[in-house]
Length: 178
Image (tube, rainbow, N blue to C red; front, side):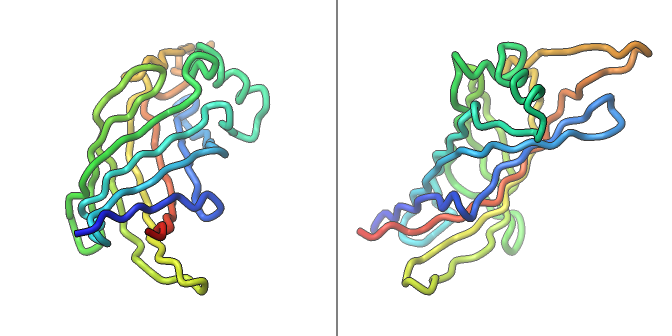
């Protein structure tokens, strides 16, 4: 079977994260610049091999001061580690259109195996004759597993920042012509 290459359509994709603040609410953020591709055997998405990168310098939480701090060595260390990279292979069916994918997430020079939940949105042909697939991806990681150890305690003794980070992405890929 022929290999198919699917390129990310960044105008129809988004990558978000959420982390607890003072353990009473969550702060959300996103990466504005990212790229990726998927390789499959024909159109069989279960054979997917994914390579996805996020540019740390593009982080946005709608607060310039916080964004600047997130780029420092306290958090992502954008100067020394400009990208967050995920490489995964194979979707494992868990329901009708539900899957999991296990792969290596590399952040701040630390690579760890993570498992993400994947909802397959379907395969369609767009008005210009291109085949497109869409996915909704979600998961959780512990930021400290990747060396993001910044921690403060509030004046009342509460934890300032949660360790668990929720990840969500909606991504669309376009099949490349041979």
